[in-house]
Length: 463
Image (cartoon, rainbow, N blue to C red):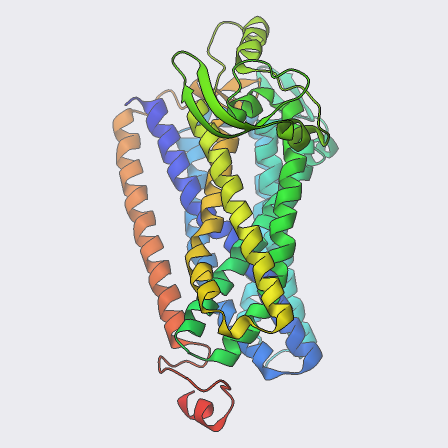
């Protein structure tokens, strides 16, 4: 394995680990803020308990996510110096603003939120968690602005072999940003909702603090319905942008080596022979056109056609990305999303009918579904990044030309193994703390509370 492969593997590993934490932080901050708002408005102590309890999960997740994010950024200078040299004038400002504005904002108001209970007025203290939520969302915006330039360069000029920003409005108004940011926000709300629903379902099955967890599920169920549908709609918007800005990625995501004609199908399942460039697939007629054009007609160019165009435009080379990885990542994301939409709608129906408490079968599905958002988030990132290859900045800089020239494979391998070990330990610590916090429950005890009302005499004694 050479330095390029190892550098790519290292960045992929650290990004996957980091992105386990980011969506959950964004989503939990928002839901905790809603719980606390309900407490301030309704003056019901159980909402305060919800904000504090689920806030513990947010704080644990946020702390681990910060560590993984810091390690990730060091790689730009270490393993990807040629990339940093080429795109630093554009990539640097969004990252700097994210750190100096959004991250500092999060960190400051997290501290005020943690230590502000019973020290600040209820409304001022509520404002701190809403500002934390705003900060997490703005962090995502600036990071996505930087990443979107890699996907669809905009607002730049090439000066002395380097990309320099000449229009910040175009950078922030990049169509990729405008579709990716809401997509990530909805995905984050989905992740947090299913985390709360899954943990609550497990505790409901164990008959622990039943009333608390039943009430905890109400808001996440509603958010899950909105968020999962929002993910689907914003994903559709992204597809409409990508079929114009990154047609090779979308052709690979559908497994189309040849042009589709005026009406494009959507491939449900395919056997792909990349060596002979042949695909046998099960298709739904016209659905591909609808997904990317919003109507039941529209052509998708095949990879062979695009390869010829890119050779003519950029010179000799292979411009077809890893087809199988791109294709199956896309489907894993979609199928996970469909399952979550169904589970969210079923939960909303049960909530409306008042039958949620006795839904043991549904609770088992929710417990298993905790991992679905992570599958969708990770495979969505795989599709976005693998599908862009061989470019690190689409049409401007290849991944092979972006790697640091003087960093040996041995050094990268050592750091790769070290990072994976550290991240595995961090992940294990986070899971341990999550499980421990869940077992302790909202009232700081691991004793089962089988009484349906935690504020009854029996429940208070246990607490």
